[in-house]
Image (cartoon, rainbow, N blue to C red; front, side):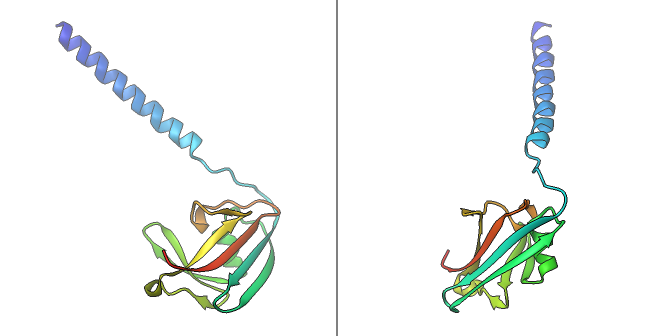
Length: 133
């Protein structure tokens, strides 16, 4: 009987920890976004093409992907991880040649995709044409 009670208590504790962990993760993993109008800068650089252009954009979008869609400067393909940017300002990155677009946000390498990257007023985004994984 004692062993049976211990198993029941242990099972209840494990379930309680799992439920609390699930809700805590949802609360702390949520990305904060800025509502309202924001002015952002998007810089596109390709040394290979000797190309550099600065785009200014005003948007109500909360995430970078939506703002880039408004600007019509990218082409992206859907993947299991979200959208993969393969063309910026008409410059195509060829995956077969290990070419890709590196995204830098306010001087720091991006850690999320364009559709998960929140934007704030004054943000500066750089797309750097890169070769090699």
